[in-house]
Image (cartoon, rainbow, N blue to C red):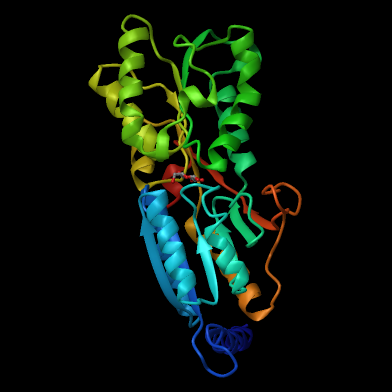
Length: 340
Ligand code: BGC
């Protein structure tokens, strides 16, 4: 037994030594990965930190940029291309904003990987690393359906809806999949949207900026819920759930059944306190490990893990993807897991 452990340890060392050279070419030149992420929510910082650490451990040099606006991010991607990195990883603020910018990457044969959000209408993108966005939308709908006992005919419950940024394809997928599950209950009256605001365009939060959700939840509470109870809220992520709950608290309302996404530390805390019902956690280390496999594939010609070759037609090509499995966190398991 002891012997087996020693062999394993030796093999691990050999394996680690083999891996440590991955960031260098055969001539010893250090390979550079440019990472262009939004800084619009805390989850991006966590993903950036995780990706940077994994790549540095493998010997890559990192050129990391965060940006708040589409124009700034376009400029950062342009600047990154000008420096001829071996690969560019983009978490796009606007999925459609890189069609022109990435033409130069194609011309220079610099491979591009889409991180978390797909890049649309460009053939410059080699792979897509994300979570299963369809499953996230389904998960939100199914959790709410079960929590309210809708299948058994319970209700009516008052529900208001929020969605993510119109510029992000993910936001559309989350909302469409959730609504596919909940729409029958709106039609038969088990769920009631008192504001009548139920289309994606009406409920989207610009830039995923949670402060952009504040005026709307205030307005909804003032106009439709002074005497009525708001029982359920669809929130597209944890940041936005935090603002909605904050305004409901200020208005003296009881906590609704409310969704979230990302598994932010603040959401874990709200779940423990009984304020937020659940979140769907997207473990950064799980996603970044898959992304690193893709980076190595494009710079070294190795095989990345791919588990989806049908769902992400970006308008020009089907982008081969690895979609990680998200995890639902609520009061039943929040204490057995650490937020990341
Ligand atoms: C991601 C979410 C994130 C949101 C805001 C979406 O594209 O999929 O996990 O909460 O962007 O950054």
